[in-house]
Image (tube, rainbow, N blue to C red; front, top):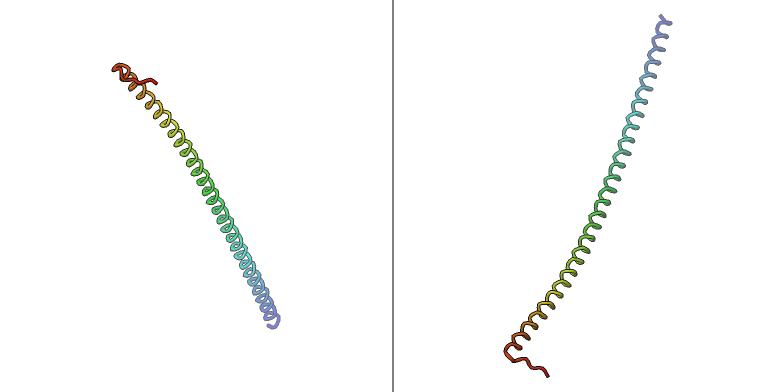
Length: 109
């Protein structure tokens, strides 16, 4: 019986050692998975932050461009109104001079 007990003890020790190895391997695998998940999460956060900043930059650029375009259009409109106003003034003066000439009221000095 002593040999049987020895063999049983040896088998139990080997089984316990295998169980400890499997447990340690499972712990390492779980830790590796946690590390990879943390790395992927951080990478996704970084990418999202980059995309957000890029969108903000593009939005700011588009806004600036729209503002410049609106300012340019406003300047063009002001110039057009100025020219139109001058033309209307000249036409009115011409009409007034015509009426005065017709009535003999045009005074030329």
